[in-house]
Image (cartoon, rainbow, N blue to C red):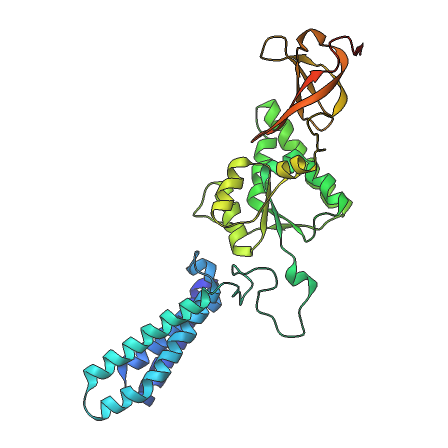
Length: 345
């Protein structure tokens, strides 16, 4: 009912505008076009651009409208002159041409990098339109939008405590719903993961080390949570915080900034160079013959050459090579000074 009344009010305003413009200019085309622009722009202001044009920013609508008005303003004199001389067809053509040129110019201006009149553009930090002298620190803070995987993972809680993240953490309501569905799953493993995610969120809010906001923005035309996250990040200029490799790649392809906790963890792992020595426990046998496997404290897998028979023992190894894979780092080693340099664990 509210939207209906708003629409009727907008129609009334544009109708009054049309009759006023026509009475003043006696130009049906000019009055109709101007009234149409007023109608569209008023509707956008009343209902919000996202309800009418889900993929069109308010910046684009505003600049296109201003461009159209400027085009018609420029057209007013030649159109009036042509009308006086009886060239009405040419006058209409000129009016429409300048009107469309104005729209095209406005759209081109709106797409300029860094333009974000309403804070929703693609510009970089500090590029949004602001009143001089009223810039605030918050205008440069980017939202960090949490996805399901990073909430369930739980490491975001420890990172928040270190204060390495600035700005609020944004929890979309559709992500919260997904976590709730997982926590109600009949699968005990999924249910435990979902409940862990809810527990992490409660701890984040209780600790207060970083602000957590729930946003109820949703995209009814999109079903996948990942696609909704990318859309939300694009619309708000925020960054997606995730552990999901596929979401990471999709978001980057669409120009969305991604904070991947797995990448952060890999970057913070201690650097080990060939020739270095360290002590490690041989946990199990490897895939290859007489190969042992161990793990560093950060979870990095260590392959011990000729260490298959040393399972359950602590050995001192020397690094021979390091391989970086998509899943992380693998360190290849050999037992220092033969197989006698070990202790039982």
